[in-house]
Amino acid sequence: MAILNISDFGAVPDGVTLATLAIQDAIDRASSGDTVFIPSGRFLTGSLFLKSDLTLELAENAVLLGSQRLEDYRRIPTRVAGIEMPWPAGILNINQCRNVKVTGAGTLDGQGAFWWHKFWGDDENGGMLAQYSQKGLRWVVDYECERPRNVVVYQSEAIALSEFTSRESGFWNIHLCYSTQVLLQNVAVNNSTGPSTDGIDIDSCQHVRVENCSVSCNDDNICVKSGRGAEAQQLAKTASDIIIRNCELHKGSGITLGSETSGGIERVIIEHNHFSGTGVGFRIKSSRNRGGFIRDIIVRHLTLKDVCYPFMLQLNWFPQYSYGQQVSDQQPLHWRKLSEGVEGMAGLTRVENIMISHITSQLTRQQNFSRAFFIEGTEECPINKLHFSHVHLQAQEFGKIAGVNNLHFEQVTVDAPAMTLTENDAYER
Image 1: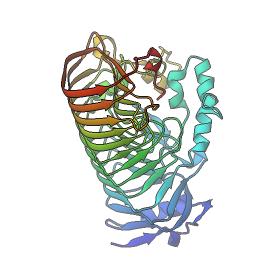
Image 2 (image 1 turned 180 degrees about the vertical axis):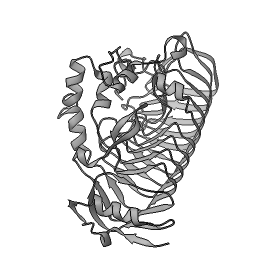
Image 3 (image 1 turned 90 degrees about the vertical axis):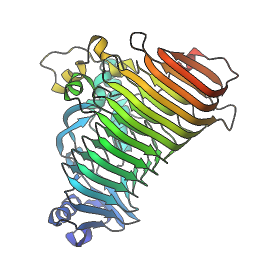
Image 4 (image 1 turned 60 degrees about the vertical axis):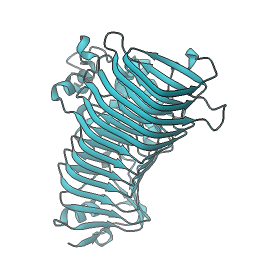
């Protein structure tokens, strides 16, 4: 079991010289059980592809610095935000592998500002976002604006990610997809801003544990997904048997189920997590063309401080993004996939058996906005068996609860002195 130092293969730690070929050479030459070692320094790289029975170790002051040239990221078949399509590979890719470890106290830095500017320009309302929105194409721009992810685990098994930091990703930070037996432990995600810079996305995976992680980003901190629309419904690749525990959530939109639910989400445990200054605590989001199900979810022992929306459950989320237009056969295949939702009653996500207990949400300053409940199911297919017990919430507004059957409150107390205002129905992420 050898240790292969990338410096011995010609990788230059100056943050300027492209080191992709040298690092990939070290990976390719490694034998089963070997470790590829990233020493201290800043190594500029495009896409790297790990292989089975390999450990990648990042030294404490090692930085893998993502290239800002799209041509340095090979376009490969993958899944992006619920749709299977060609897309740039990530910085680190674990594709169709088994028994891979990525560890060490180093950092993956996606240099995301370049990619964010491409999407939303200087003011977060320009760039490709403005161009497509003006044409009524808000629903497709996220897929047209190609941006690399920092880490992608795809169709893999027995994967362990630990100790390192992922920061400033151009798109999602860590994306797990179609994989099983994955452990994330003591990983930190730090994104200052950026569109769709989710922290950790668990996408149609089984038997995943996320423990002792710290996540600060500009979208969902940790998200469980299972695909979008008719394609994902037909694939029926469920996200299941997932545990998210002992994590610290800071800036971001909380721990989320959805909005891609078409393959189904079940048997998720979210416990002993701490939120501070987070936009949302526990969140479910879907739309009327996703279908699928969310069921048998346990949320317990959460501590929330200065969280705007402790509980946000919305089944008609972000229509401008969620509902695509009918397009012709001359349009790109991914446009057609986006336009093919799950129709009729089958398109309504079935949400049932959600057990929420032992939650405390407090405001350290009364001027901080908080709405205790923001729950919007659908009249035709209400959320069923939603149980809150041993919950104490400090908030400004009580909020709204609609589209629910079999709602149970047991030892729930709410301090909410202000009126519930319709203007607070909007949430930007």
